[in-house]
Length: 114
Length: 114
Image (cartoon, rainbow over all chains, first blue to last red; front, side, top):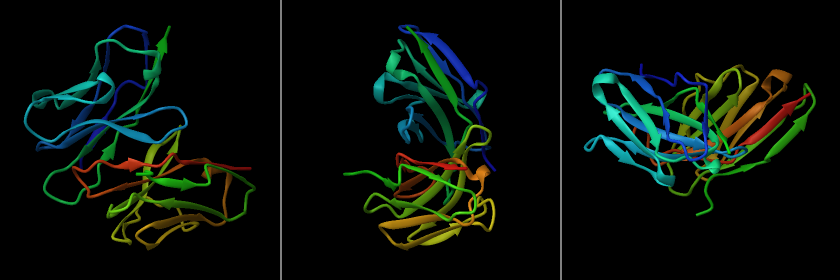
């Protein structure tokens, strides 16, 4: 079965600083990869997803993520963080070739200091 | 599009009472998911439906939990009797498919069992 690991429970950055949230997955083939964001009191919203092709994926709100097969990683990045980016971020992995339900990581809580 | 609709948004009840959570998925989505989110366990998939049929309920914690989907536009998650450890945020999500499809989450129901 696929699994996904988000090694950082909390990340604190200053507003305007760059951000990288880590995500590692365990699966033999190329999976479907997702990043979702959960703002306080809200449901999860898709930021971006990767299926194939260009390994650098652009998403909403200025986020991007890069798929690195050799590292089994799909890290989320943003060059300059805004206070409104403070939220919980979830990485998810789905399997190709069948009806598989994506597995979500435990999430990383982003704290933004002014 | 109104998105996934959940009701109630907040529920406070006493131990032993029956609790019913409701969900209206996005029209045209064939899959519906119920998740539970807690600090201790993160986001857990409880059950999902395909075309109104329950496919996998292995995540349902106990027989006290039951879910139904009588038609394509309505689902319920029922807890009877409720216990304090059921306190959590319950999300409903829907999608057009599985592996590579985006899941659209509702705003959640925050349940507190006293």
